[in-house]
Length: 73
Image 1 (cartoon, helix red, strand yellow):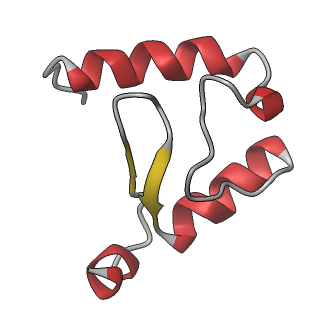
Image 2 (cartoon, one colour):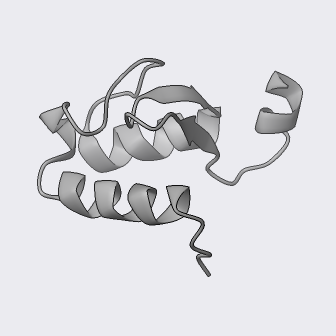
């Protein structure tokens, strides 16, 4: 599984329905650290962790839509 996640330079991550990280690749980790100044960690809860500032609400809205089956382009 790790090899598949790391086989691309695209940001790939998985969260559960409580918005906690289950897994992510190094591209996602690097992007999030560059964008927000803090690394992501397995178990980190996006809804509760305020490292994402004002983007937290937008991220939660996008995650919610994805979990409801919406398609993003």
